[in-house]
Length: 152
Image (cartoon, rainbow, N blue to C red; front, side, top):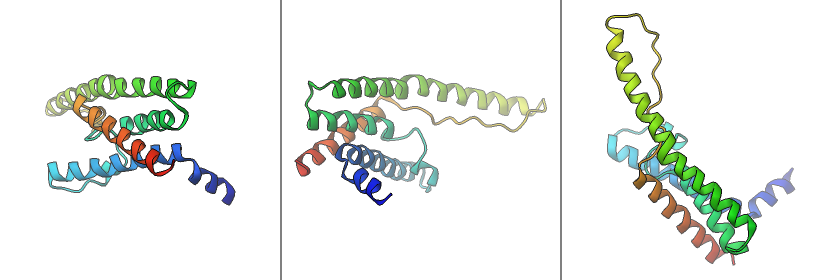
């Protein structure tokens, strides 16, 4: 088992992606604290917010593969396609779902006065603005670039 964890720790591409994700989550927690003046531990693992940790993860993964194996490698192509799908989903589909949840929560609150409705609140912070996705992409690329310089 120790050899397994040692091998994982030596996988620079995996460590790059994990570092980008963790950094984005920490930054997301800090920006949420700055915006709301309240610490929310959920921000350390939750979706939504600035910067996009999903984007940071997949862009750092694709960039690390590009730096390590070259941009002409088939694995880089797969990683870029994966990153594109994740970024589209974060700024498009999940953002739309979050907006719909916000409207539904407001409707539920207004109906509650007149009807018996179970207290079910939908999660509103699901997706990202284009700026949050861009910030995650820049962060992911920057971390992959730093890892590529340090671990050549």
